[in-house]
Length: 333
Image (cartoon, rainbow, N blue to C red; front, side):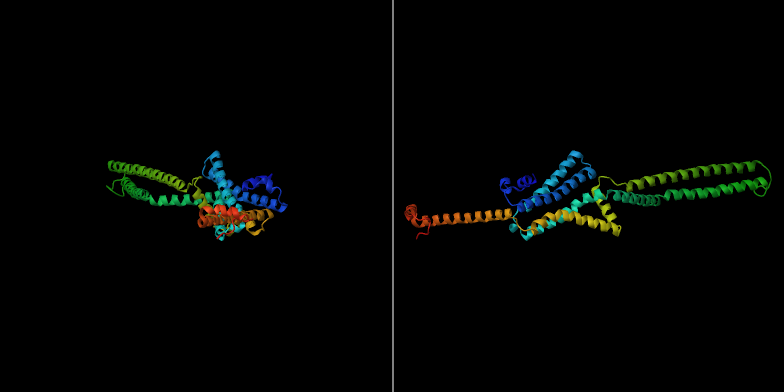
């Protein structure tokens, strides 16, 4: 079943392939199976990016993943279907560079998938720190009004305390008119003190209210600045690599994971380049060479006919008939 599938995928005649040696058939299945590894990785990555990170929906994400997978399939198939002798160093180099780029891009989705829990924990801690910093920054930038109110309250406290002392001194006879007792002057100064006390209470209430309002605004500002969208792909990738670079252990495991993904991406290329040609591949190359020689022979024959026609004119056909040899196109003239 696999042999028939991969024969059709690579454009081979299945009836011819099934009659080949076991090694030849095994190599076709092996290369085809290895080629499906990067295709599967990219299909999964494309679907995950679309569905989990971009919120594209199930159908769109599935179509996007399949599109990317088919694209990688076409690229890798073109490389595998190219005869080894026809694969230049430039083509090999391009495929290696493409594998590196594909691994970097493809591993992003897999990294976000496997390190998703660690990333969310890191983002929560980072968000808390950002919120604290932004809240403090907002309070510092907008505390001038609170400072003015504090200064006014301090001044009013001094005025209130002075009016209180003046009233008491008037009442006990140690100040003011010098008459002890509650007279008209003492009552007047008591009214002044009560008025200043009421004014102070109002100013303190305003100060407390302003502080609470500013604190609430600062908290909301900090939350807003610390909030990160769940579908912001670049933000998540940036935070992921910040998390990875935060410790040697995370860098070590990330490096292992990257090497594993790269190996899966490039393994079919190594297998294609390092293994010997099978009998079936040699037969394909031989057919190509034979066809090339036949083409060269036909071209040489046509050139000879044209040369004879140019040399002998209308008599060329007649002379070729009279030649009556096994090679009737032998050189004449």
